[in-house]
Length: 474
Ligand SMILES: [Zn+2]
Image (tube, rainbow, N blue to C red; front, top):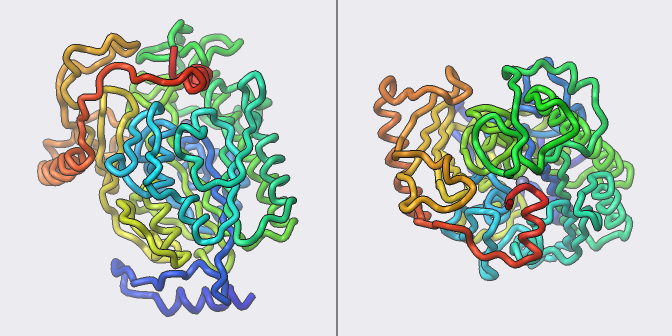
């Protein structure tokens, strides 16, 4: 109670003229007596922002649990992943940085051992740490588990992940009464294809599909543009895009129910004061730009934009929405500032002022595809610049051979007027185009892009098997 009163006082004292952001005292997320809070990092694989409360159409009700979490916290409407695949997306979250520090630009990379990670930093400051993971790409070799003392998987012997099991494992770890403070990372998988882990839900059926239905061709490959169903996604359904999209929505409803059970148990077991950070590693193409049920090749918002909610009663502003553009690379700098812990050099921004109820202004965030096409983007508010570099020469003899673009392009999108990113607005806004192109060029240079990375990297058999099961290898 005292915490709530103090937090309200802090927010009131920091109220400044619109547009001005206050300097927030580091450590504002701590308990009144200065102790570090417990932290839950809750991530959902392949969860599009526009299927989640706050960004979804107002008449969609796929995520009631996340709606309640948002009411108890701060919802970010404009968060982008730094890449459109699991490993580079999570590498950005865990390191607070773009690839020049962590080197991971595809699902084949790994974070070097000398790069500080969210868990390794918190562990150094006395946190007991655990991770429950449902994605086999996030393994010891990925480097993403460094700093987690206890690691459990919700993947069964047939390589299928089970989110109810993941929730059970997370609750079982909490039942061991870990030393405080603790950090628990729970990574759920249901929206990742194949979309077959959930029962059909009325909310998914009733949501009006904004995209036209299309007849698709089941493919023998896991890759490709055009009206195909990637092999790993094929279900016993008529090959209609609308039916597959409904199954994706079923998965979103299902994962929300798992989140509800986890958060309810957290409170019932006396952990209601934990900081909860909820987000996703990347989104999913559902047919926009002729990209069906995959992620990684494009950087359009279906694949790049992710939901994000932070909640801690008495500390994080409640029922607050932040429209400004943010990135997953902002998570670590914000967390370390809130905890009052020293941060290594990071690329992300400290969002503390936003979490205390203030309005933030837009800034550029950057993103990258996860294949050798190396498409990059800079997003600032409603403006989004996409750079497609010249095609690799010679063209890689890979499964994307026919899909490489024929020439370099820089395209500016006005997301307000053109949410599907189909038109080039550079002639209407030449100054913004030039500004963002300078910023994106500088970012590419800083990150060694385009890298000239060509061909398929070597992977060990265990990782290859995991990648194949998730549709990342043929
Ligand atoms: Zn993923």
